[in-house]
Image 1: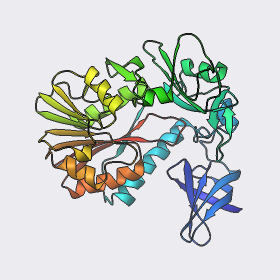
Image 2: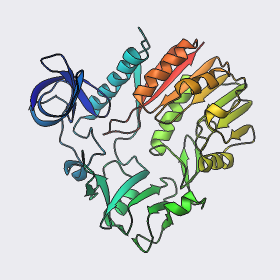
Image 3: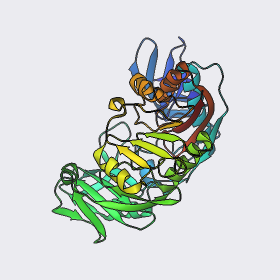
Image 4: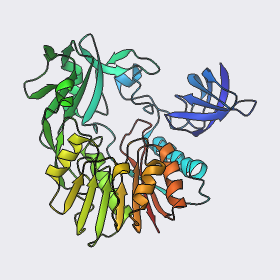
Length: 391
């Protein structure tokens, strides 16, 4: 046990302070400005990691979580004990730290923030199942807490978490369309013991992995999307629309020319931001998402079903890249830099890879024009950042 003053937020929902020897101590459950007693779980020469055991002096933004499942110890909403204003401040500071410490930038534009929806925003969730009941993993444990409620889940999902039965299953992915009300459950395990309302389209994970098609129709960014059970989509339509708006602002006017939409998913940015381009190349390695993109996008878009790193670059006026958490990396940056685009928009869901990738893009000759956090996941540590660059 150690008494510690926490100075700044860090990734993964923790805050960091220094012990008497100057070692950085990352404390989960702590907030910047607090004095806490922490239980150290990991101790290394240069850093330690621990958990809050007692708050001696609370931050002004500390609140009681509004969700009973979070109060019971659910590990999903790891910032539910912070006010929304404090969450926003923490997320800005984490991005600023990544640009300073990892990208090694001496200066950069002010970090903006675009809010979405505070609760009921998730239209896709993945839940563990224990003894037929869906729930979430307990913080710092593999134990499953039944989801008696879920503040961040759409009501069409929350009712399935609360009232559905999934006997024999290990996990279930639940998806709902806010636009149409369609509901989908992808069950890891047999369907024999599943009891859900008749409107829910049931399918097993094994069937999805084998190529079976189940879709919902969603609306975001001012248009309609087909989203298959095996395809990635944003946290919900509000988050998707906010990201479209942020990417459009970072990209600036598009009047003709060629756009590359890398890691395009179901075609979100190619089908909104890039509609006024003469032509678009949309690249997506995952087969289900690439197939949805082909159905969703117009004829001026060519969908390439390859990893970005295996694609032969073409000249472009604008590159939009929305990679997975691991980011672009040196190979991804090199491939997309070969497009010789004057403008580049990077969408990142991990601040560590954000810092690395921005540093690589700056080294390739780009300058940083804009930085905006899109708060797509309130009450959690997850940060979506949209960065605009030009050369």
